[in-house]
Image (cartoon, rainbow, N blue to C red; front, side):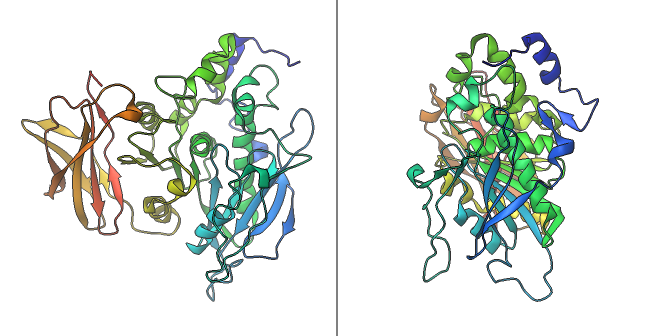
Length: 421
């Protein structure tokens, strides 16, 4: 039975996130997590290597975390004189695992990539396509193909994510997940072939949630991209809200400890928020609140009816272009200012190092569940350093403006809500 911490003490220590000792924030000892963990290679025979590294103690016992690793060098595609590669940490979503094909995709982009499992499991070893040499997609999707590690950390069910809150934290999945990601980052930075000063992190769904945590905790990252995941899970239409509400008197402790809304105000890593208008897991209003919580450099990409999933979550080209701009000197994404409505027009300032090709106004007049609302999109004009769009219809309760450049990269304004939204 777990020992309980008095809720008032938890609120003082965790909600306020007092930084008298910068080495420890909330439940995370960053002084230790920023040291490279011990590791061992499990398989280096293929283009995507497999390894284990030390994790946090789970129920008083040491753990190991499984991860895939790939780089241009492991793929046999490093160019002459290319000594070091920027790095990227890849965080799977709920029900997912370490995906070899995801690490491969980033190695193809010129990065050293590490993708860890956050459920105490090891996925099936990758098979490779005979024609392309790439890992066969979706091999690890079936959970039956994964092996539970004898010294693995907590699984990734709702019980581990929510119900363990209260007292000792060594069985809390959110603590383990963020710690495992920061340890993976420290390990990645320790590799000789990695440019330790140019690393990024991206995650999908629960991995996006975890990205929000680690981007707020680990200031060594140069860029972060949470896809779908956000904070304010205890509000509104979040599908996680019922699980949080069921915690009763422990609810406040979970929110103070593990909801990203309490950490994002400390995020100084440049961050790109990627989501869809109708995401049922991370509703648009909670997403916008998460975006607003960040005081540092931030960007938004909202896609009408973006599907939810791992391949869909790593597909947007803007993720790679954004990270390239901070880790490889690539051309940055366009930057949109705050929309202003005057008369029958809406105007958004825009600056861009790339040529802009298309702009659109997106809005919905529907009410009810955000995941069920229909959206309309109409053309807007680009000129004189701004986007000029028709004024949203009077019945529009939620709207935003997008712009797409000559690379096909799209960014959007912050989402605008009316009083009737």
